[in-house]
Image 1: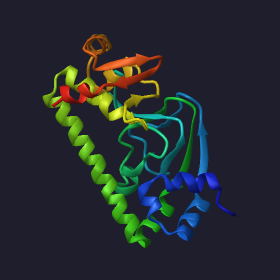
Image 2 (image 1 turned 120 degrees about the horizontal axis):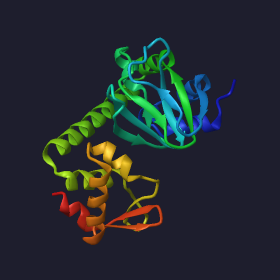
Image 3 (image 1 turned 45 degrees about the horizontal axis):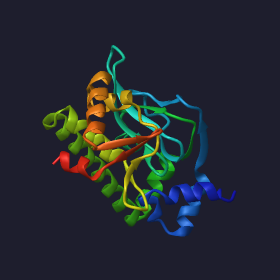
Image 4 (image 1 turned 180 degrees about the vertical axis):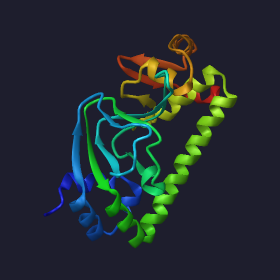
Length: 227
């Protein structure tokens, strides 16, 4: 059965799949499946066993990766969008899922099962090297987040989240176009929503950020304030 063009184009967004020759990428795409989920769908839960493992690539929408304690308190580890992926850790070490994955809006995914992923990984050195580089990049990001939690005050942590979530526009400005609530930020930095609200108010007054509807615009002096 020929691979869907949508599946192929989604796989190409991921650097280690883009390293595959076209013929291999099309073969992998023919084995992948597409999955649609409504808003607030729990896709994976922390502690799930690994009987049925897959790698998920986001074709559209957004998901949050988080962990919860016994009392239900949630910490958001990351928010991912189109072209990003999740589920890779359990594919590598066969351990239970380490986090909860929930859609933040209606989302579509391309799903690659464990056996197909590992087969293509073992057969293509460039793909394996690119995959390792991506794992290292994520580890460095985790180190940076741990450092900010340990060494920065709440102002610095809020600023760091805003900078990490922003996208550069064609005219060089940094913007967060997708909805990011104060509660989301609070759960990402381990602070209260009230504290985040006060910090955001101060950042606006200091002309570090501005709001245009749901869009957050970051000014150049915000980055300077975190140094």
